[in-house]
Length: 180
Length: 235
Image 1: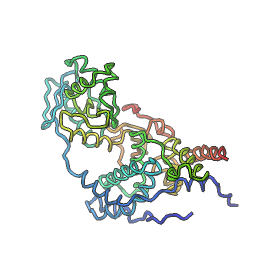
Image 2: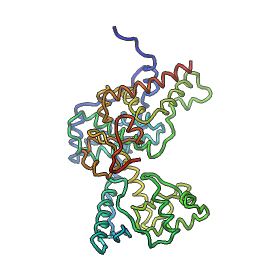
Image 3: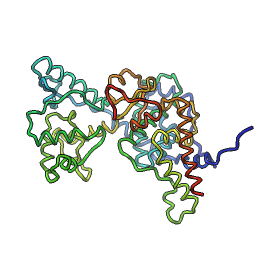
Image 4: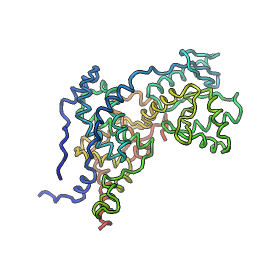
């Protein structure tokens, strides 16, 4: 499957955060351009509805703007940015008790082939996972982050990341087997 | 030997492949930044008795309290309100003194207090909660005469259709408070101590910004090794 081209996180992100902290508006614009796909990807997969995802992305970028000065460079800027967007999405899930995410194929409706229905089922099953497990799953499978970085983003141990992922994938795998 | 790739992995990657952002998202983010800029936090006068806060009114930061105990309550309330307006507090620890109010008024304010931070309820919900479902209008009037706004969160009560309803201090301030609560996380853990707090807890105040992780529920936090703080008792 072709992976859509999107800017990769880079060492420059840390420098951009430094310039944002100093009030450089152009640096913020550059960071938004570089990170909007990733922020939106995480928010959409965690929250489901495009409007909720867009609201979360806006809140996350505002937080980046306000908190840029607190980035100390102790770990990569990418982890810090993923921490911000996941924090905002997790809080949104608490506050709005959002509906489970619908898969993009949801619009396919009755005419959709069986495979789309399966995708829908899988998306619904993912939406039923506890918030932490879902967040870790999104960081792993949508954003392709290594275990160590997921652990840093969520402030947990690598072993907890592995346990959560194992439990989540086991539950989903059971569901896939039941479908057959 | 490399293990065979797990087919579930491929399906998960396909199901979770992030969709592209909508057109113009970056421009809207920049506009939101401009809209969020400016607006000094509200300044308030606080009056207190020896039992707790009696009155909060828009003002200039004046404290009205007779006696050391009353003064301590008023000063604590002013401090907590400043943190709340700065988006660093989601609950108040200062007691309130509403004994001079009529029983109906007190029941309405107690119901408003039960609305969690960051959430809203309709006027009709308050009326039902106090066992007077037909008294929606009287509920609105009682909330409008809330002597301790912000601390007793009458701004979290809206019309059933989602409209803002009224607010004694003006609808722009009501809107602003709801926006503020929307942007302030409710449960925050410290990645160093693995303790879960509510913003405003002294334990969290000592945690560096870069160690803060937001959680949706206490149960979620427990599931990844965090424990609830014994001081602020998050729920």
